[in-house]
Amino acid sequence: MNSLRILFFVSLLGLLGFTSEYDVKPFVKGSFLEIQQQYVDKPYMLLFWGKDCAYCMKELAMLGKLLESYPNVMVVTVATDPFLESSIVLNKMSGFGLIQAQNWVFADDHPEILYFDVEKRWRGELPLTYLYDGKQLISHSGMLKKTDVLVWLKNLGS
Image 1 (cartoon, one colour):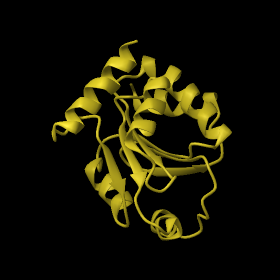
Image 2 (cartoon, rainbow, N blue to C red):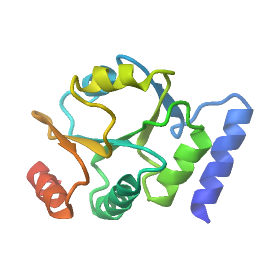
Image 3 (cartoon, helix red, strand yellow):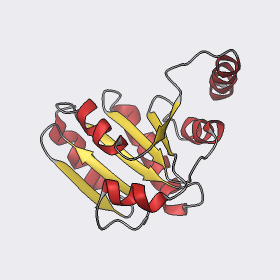
């Protein structure tokens, strides 16, 4: 019920021309670097997902539950479905308990350009996750294991 209220409020603000912390940003060439610069000394998780990716949905559900115990960890999500509607992104994140995440969506007719901008050898395989501890950026292709995420979180001192 609470997530429905949030989505209603966000939609209302959008109709009125206001922005909110729940806006979905367009992910274009250079956005990956922008995210890295924004969190240069801060730990964060960066999750690339697709609306029809079953493993992505499992990973997001697992992380949503897991991160309830780690509210200080910044989460950034990127929907790789070009021009996916903000309401769909916010609804998914709300359902996984990740509404507070910074959310982005691919905003290029040619997603290959964005794949290459993120990682030269990436061809769009999902899920793709980056874990940054404030010093080192680790890339993980495929579904994360809960135990690996817990070790990473504990190493942060969260």
